[in-house]
Image (cartoon, rainbow, N blue to C red; front, side, top):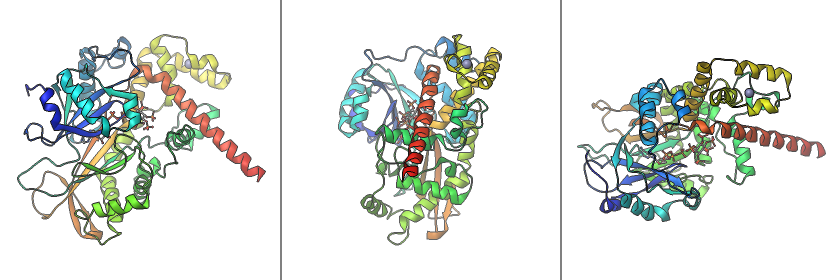
Length: 444
Ligand SMILES: O=P(O)(O)O[C@@H]1[C@@H](OP(=O)(O)O)[C@H](OP(=O)(O)O)[C@H](O)[C@H](OP(=O)(O)O)[C@H]1OP(=O)(O)O
Ligand SMILES: Nc1ncnc2c1ncn2[C@@H]1O[C@H](COP(=O)(O)OP(=O)(O)OP(=O)(O)O)[C@@H](O)[C@H]1O
Ligand SMILES: [Zn+2]
């Protein structure tokens, strides 16, 4: 597509959502190349004095980590690195059927500046304060809009889609976890992180969602997880109707689903779920649970997440081997038994260190990805369709569905130290919280 998006194209792109790093725009024009597509545009932190244009690819050390992937190592820009990371690393692991790496299309600086300005009032203010569209990017990613079905000959009225950010779905078993952090073996990182987020005022209440339920493989537990996500969506759950958000937070966290929101949501489902009032939401959550359970998508995600088998408490030592610097963790370790174990990590081969860190980073992407699952009612069950089908017995309906993974970005190697510090902070805060709760209950 030899097309450059310019200033006068900007009006046709509207705000769809954003995460920490990218802003996503939906198309509302009529150009056939763009109908049913979104643009994923890179942002840049406002506190960075100079914007970067992504002209450099991997760092020297990252080239070592990803040396088996020729296209990654030779990619001239970070954008091309990201593209090949999705194509060559994540796609084979998650299945190409559920991944759309998109294509890069060139943009002018004016296009990016106008878009940035146009979407300002729809963005959450804390996201606006943190970052803006990077005006120096010379291309953006064009991806299928996973909240819609591609326009076809037959006009289908409704498409309802859910976006789930499942986070880490297993408890670590690694021998490198320090005795002080044993709690990590029985309480999920998600639950502990919730306590820290509450403490820091980043959330106003603890999530009712438990990732272990979602990844359990048991239909009942999956249903419990979906109900938890519905109750406290935060940044883990969103629902779109024909591409418009009807539940969850646009661009970030959402408060708990109140009774009022629940009623509006129930009404919004009217054309999609054929159930009597007050039952649509229940049936819809059942539809999600059934689809998610039977699709096998979560098994794939869990397998990739489990590539992290050393835990950050093991991987951090391999990281210091790679950067050839004294290990800051060993320097502080006072436990002899543990120091021995860590020493064993410092005597492994360079290739083994590279493998541990590479797997850790791939797993980190899988712990941060989201899934988008879209449904549309299917009138004729026997008609041919390129999509999978799911039936909802309670309403006697069938739906076409499609599922995609989004946000498969590569995590930078330099983040390893931050991961270690955050991990210690999360566990530390949780242990402290448990202690104070116990002290309080003794005093009562
Ligand atoms: O570390 P975590 O688990 O808090 O994950 C970060 C996410 O936080 P949350 O899911 O809210 O806990 C965080 O999400 P939010 O900005 O909080 O919505 C990002 O996804 C971040 O990744 P990146 O900076 O885009 O590469 C995520 O960072 P990575 O850990 O994936 O690098
Ligand atoms: N292909 C798509 N189709 C429809 N909506 C999308 C698509 N890609 C992204 N979105 C929407 O845009 C939002 C932001 O996208 P994305 O998660 O890729 O941003 P990010 O900055 O990389 O996120 P994170 O903070 O998790 O790293 C998503 O939460 C989703 O609602
Ligand atoms: Zn060490």
